[in-house]
Image (tube, rainbow, N blue to C red; front, side, top):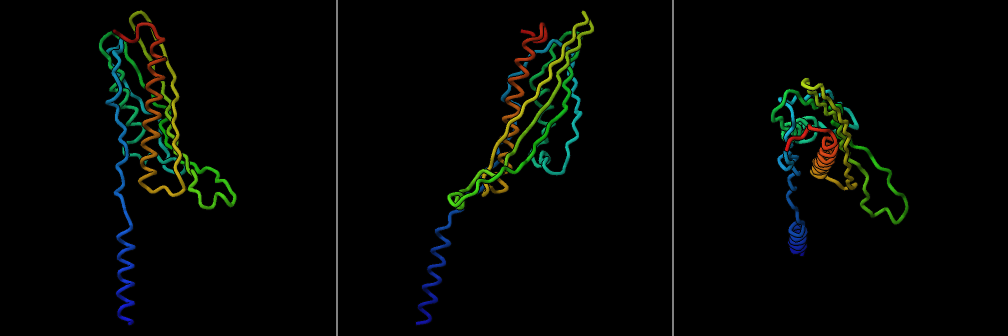
Length: 194
């Protein structure tokens, strides 16, 4: 009799393990600048200046991204701001490229006990200056651009979910920066060539 109980317990444990379904973690979305269309800029060269020193302490988590946020911005500048001629230069000055993680307040109450609430916000923030200097004719212009994007994640989020949220926040902030940069540069006379 005892032997049959052990067998039944073993079958129950095996059935319980077989019922557990684990899915492999999905790879985080990549932050790529290949999707952005280049602009022909009336300049002979592009200079990228990284004036941002990323802190490593909390709430900053940009060092956990697959690519550093300032490197993503520099790649965007080299891809999109294409110097095609002229006598001047375009300067892309990175003053902020941060990713932060902050806790959100949780709702209290009996009905919230079994709810997987959104408790963390991942936010990517970019601040850049784009300066255009033309020695011939003395033309110069500057555009200051600030872009950000936030993603929230649930209490039950895994490390993979956090990594995905970091990449989503970076992608959203980069898309916002791209749209703003195109709008601001479009206002400057003769900076974008046909």
